Length: 302
Image (cartoon, rainbow, N blue to C red):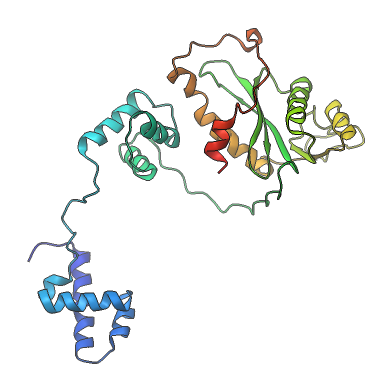
């Protein structure tokens, strides 16, 4: 008999004991299947294998044999080399897409992630705690938009800019995304104007309590709706409700969206062979074209 792991030997001994009890009619075959934790059909197969091969037939024949689906060693080495030399600043999801699109390696995301973690190239995710109950999405597009900014080193240098994003609560579709020197009244009004001109007026806007959105008399206290800001007055004239968020968790949908942007946008210019950008104040930022965010929306809003 071949050498099998201890767990496999113990399982085979239990199978044999249960089969012998069923053969002796001390239990039914349905009860035998229930004891082992399998279906009746599988129990009949084990009985046939025991009758044909005896005790050795109760071992899994795949044990000790390499999987037919295993990846060739050369492919594994190629994946690790590509990640270390070309994609070390990519997250695993983005790297997996590049493997499929540019290097024609069709391995699954889970396999690639486990390979990188086993090689020590990617840290394992910490276990998440119990999440608060998520707020249901609005049923129709245009009922609620999220507007938020994320300060980040988007060009992978010392410079930090704010990425101003407006997304729809119902579908997470990106309506507007623009890098600005700083999120302020002027940049926010520009973003809202472009969205309204392209998509029409919406019902409500969900944002943080920054000074260009709301006046807050004291830190941590409710906003003062009797003293609207310029943004607030503009939206009042359009009958658009403003909803303040009182914690980062309350803006979870937008925060998760920024996590995607931060994991994908910074590495992209360098991999595309683009030269470093000048200061944002020297850049001529043209009006965004319709469908400019289609690739992002197609990838993440299905």
